Length: 269
Image (spheres, rainbow, N blue to C red):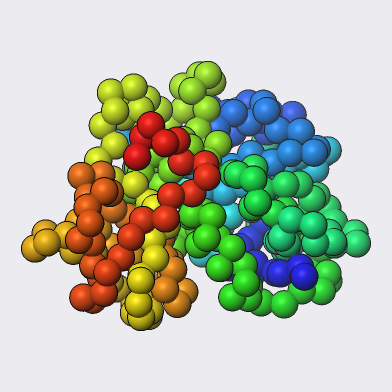
């Protein structure tokens, strides 16, 4: 079944300099974009803190950006500041984002459709005209995302979260081979010096369900993390590294454990 991501919007980048323009600003390699692939990336502050995450698509005569709907106007305004003399025009479109699980049929007339580049099992994403049918984001999509440990916009804190804290390095959202971009210095230093003190990880309660809002993770008497996206007894949590292997993690008094996703390197656990 196909699902419309109603909390996402689509921006277009038109002009001869569209790829080089983005290349100098985002965490991933815009030159790696092809009609058959997408690129997951982020815009950071000059201090290396997260502002927004997005997927890029090559739509032949333009680049399309699948971003959070409530970030769209901010991204147009902020990115436009860097245009200078570059041949690039940035506009918000009325296109929509559709997603589906691996093996589910893609939409009949997409503007673009590609595999979700973050990990195996993530399914596909597509950009479609506003007239394309599709329902609201269902529980099944959220469950798939939580099971795989894939973050969405609500799992980041604006101007606080580091790209590596949200696992963007492990989910193909950061290029270490490209040139400079905004926030690159702190991102590279954090990576090469091993300074990531916390990460976003999938967790599960052994009994009960997570609260609808909030939720603090405790190890003994210490606060070691907080709950982000959640559904039933599954959630994504921003968890301190020194608590990953703790046998006494709890949330609201219920035992909690990390569920290591297949993409997370064993040597880093």
